[in-house]
Length: 76
Length: 372
Ligand code: SF4
Image 1 (cartoon, protein in one colour):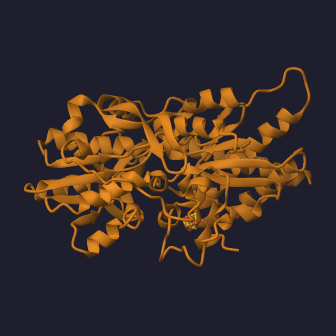
Image 2: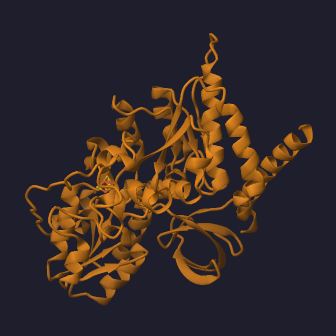
Image 3: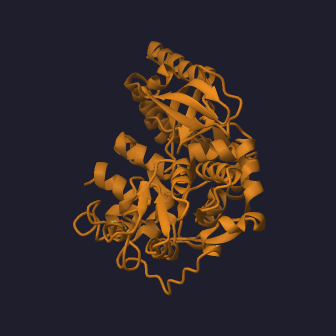
């Protein structure tokens, strides 16, 4: 039940935002994450945004892993 | 978001599994980790991670399936509610097949009860708007992830003056449940994979008390295969380090490995909203019993929005399904295979207990992906 999916903000209208969710446009509540901007990514749960997705953090974490395992391969 | 796809990259999953396997050889004893969240249980089964992990690392499902932990009495009350002609019951789909003592919402629906499945509580508010002559009740089950979402919808209904919209509040709180589990002598867990989306709301700090008191690692993890394995790796590393006999033993700690959405402090707006509308109360969990301070009730100012303050629902004694081990499975004491009914008698078409109904229930996840 705690499933949440990423979606990109297309437009904002007061308490709601239009997002692109897997290619479908839907309206979601943004009461819990009020300061969203077009182009940002949100995590959507039961019709509401529950937080922003920090794209930078997502990228850095995966790059860290990529580098780490690439390094291991070179050693072995 | 393209970068998220990389969290499923087999080129990374493989070396991470190797790393886990190497580390696991240093373990003195078996490592039992509880994935608290039902969405994790589902993902673990779906990606087949259980069988990819070394034999001495066990992943056990926890109490993190809201439908599964809803008490039998609450289920019976919801069913009784649905039989009232003046009421429209709105609910997330998971709830509909859960067997009550004598019936289920699905059965009542086939007998003509007005029960509607919605994806969002906002849709339930819309139904209330369209049906002013009816009382429209939303079955408010769920943990900290869902609580603020439903609270936000209720607030929107109140602001719009839609007062035929009501809630059946059956919410549950995760940290007190963890505390209760770890206090239970029967329960044997060495570490926690913490629910990623509950953590968005309450923050990774919320687990510090439990971690300090019981000295076991707690890792906040996301839901992609790499996220989950990274969570396992985190707990494993802490455990291996703690084995070393030194004077200044390293204490177990909370690690947030889902930083792209989870912050230490959580979502303040959501927390404020919950505090504004609700007060904390004791509540009963299936299989566990009453856990102090693990439930919510609308504050006096909002009491009129709780359906049980409007309609009296006396259902008498409730009986949990005979032979069903959901309670023990929720505590990580048994696995679905240990239930005699699993498979033949109890399956998703004919569920005996709620753990087989909800797509996130352990029995349903094991039936779909991990059947022996
Ligand atoms: S298999 Fe069915 S009866 Fe057995 S514990 Fe799971 S839900 Fe209950």
